[in-house]
Length: 360
Image (cartoon, rainbow, N blue to C red):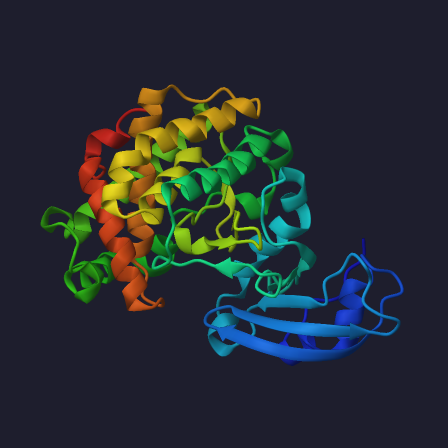
């Protein structure tokens, strides 16, 4: 299917001319005649909601309320390649997995700049809402979101069709390579010892220890990939990368870190970020069993429960590292997630070198 060239600017992306060419492959004969811009969220990526009017009316199976995501601002231009995996996911993999996510009507990337742009139907206009760490989210809802991670994992479990896709290459060490161990350690130290780390347990306020644990995780994963069934993982499975659709069911969003990996990187991060510590402690074993049962019901032989429980700690380390290096998010949300993840890491003794010394 021939698609429109990836737009370079937001005005181009919101122009009737470009939108007509972008939507034409899925909706032959469509002619966008007017675009009404809506709210814009402009951070590293730009998310712009808009409504279209078409000559002869909007096709019956297309919502007029849409959202475009790209890297259009000055800051985003420096990291445009981050959009390529997400565009490829929506273009090539989302429908194949059956995972609940935003319905994409255009997704592609520029082969020279690697700039990825996605147009999805506007879930907010349809009555949905996006979550963050301050949102109310119950253990029953976590069970529902774990079903979606199980759907993604099971659909790709050891599947050779996705083994050679370069956009799915594991990239757990991107920040370490880009900034170096010293800068990453300093960034984590500032987070853990500043206001964002005020509720981190004292024994977890050790940036070199966290970096060493994460390096141990990366090394263990490299060996495990050779011996175990990998799957496609979301790669950044915190609660803020969820939305509730108009019926209240959770779905997954923000696929910039989609890659081949091990199931527990998603599951450990997700359970630890989605619930307050007391709720997590009282439900996480049951939630893990629920996830394993979901794998089994989808034709995957799950790991034994004891090994899976041990592996959960590795996923917690992944989440704690990511939020330890995070600075360009509202401090209130960083503080909540560092509290949840560090408390979970303490409960699971997740920074212990022994956790990475043998396969899970």
